[in-house]
Length: 114
Image 1 (tube, helix red, strand yellow):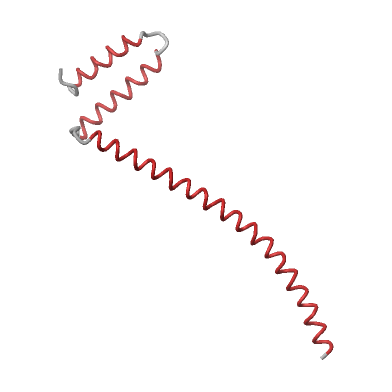
Image 2 (spheres, helix red, strand yellow):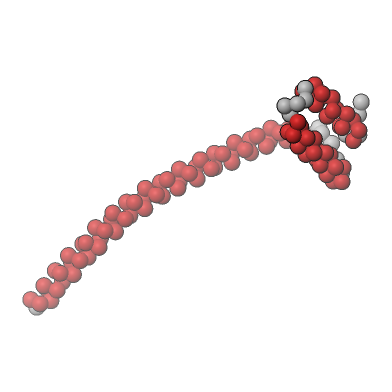
């Protein structure tokens, strides 16, 4: 019986050491979990804000008629080209000239009826 008691006491000490180590790691785990929860809440808040903005934009665009896909591709391609041209010569051109050139491009495409 004496040897068994001694063996149990030795094992008991080892178990307590393991539990102490686990307790320390579990505390770190809790801190990391709190950080993850905070980040998830921030992400959720950001998604909510974006949803609000989307609904506001949808309300503003409610009366705008959709272009057929082919026309939309042409218009978007033109806008992309115009923006890149503006970027390339932005310092050399007066803004009123840019506005006039844009108005001509849009009128030419038939998007804006004058």
